[in-house]
Image (cartoon, rainbow, N blue to C red):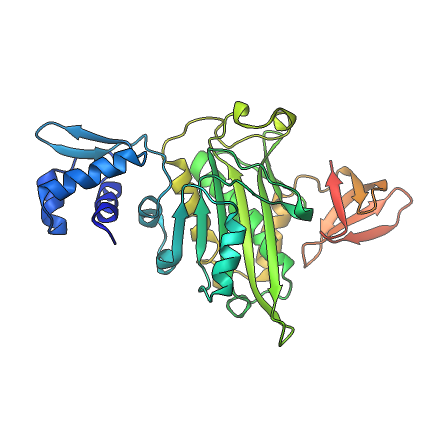
Length: 326
């Protein structure tokens, strides 16, 4: 860890409080000049650090820059072991792509890749995923031997539940899930989830999963392209100091740290409770573009949606076949 990173760690641990240059130098066994240079570099990188005469340095409570040092202090005991695998970037082409590259290189279960912005974000069906500033783009590598779910689709359900709970913990707001993998708040989409699986060619078994989550956290309406402004929203709709680091930590607390503690039945029950459309009429849009009306009734043990058509026929729909419009 560099001197700059170690100083950021100490400032994050004392966020909103003043720490003298002398204290920082003594704690890290470096010179006062090294402290000054590190603080200068951190400011240049976008961190809001105030210098208080005769008192020292203070990381502003208004700072919202994503960092490993800002996330780790907020991790739970169950998630803390995964801190060493946490990677945070100002911008990536795609966090899922970077995570897949790390997985191919042998990265550990629970390795998380986080970016403040993406230039080539992707959603389902190879569609582009708008990833403007103010977002949290999070991908995590999950190894099947660490999971105990009978259905891979449960991972997407787990992610949707984790996102809803994390948003509620940080904002007090209660989002809902639009089957299968979109999270809505106040009638607008604030999150998309993409789970990608890779099969081991030699054994034919599941090699690993990359779970991708994109959340609009402080994204402003004007940050979205005009064609998305009516359907896309964000958790806060503007600046909310420290919220992205807190949200990232809440996701870490609920995904790699809690996977061993949750049964598949518990995940699906929580997922069911957060679905927006159960008991309501929906339009099912099939992969060939044809549509039909139905009533959304339930989800099964794999998270597949059970609907009843207008002629009384029940159907079970998987994520690969259809899209849902409420």
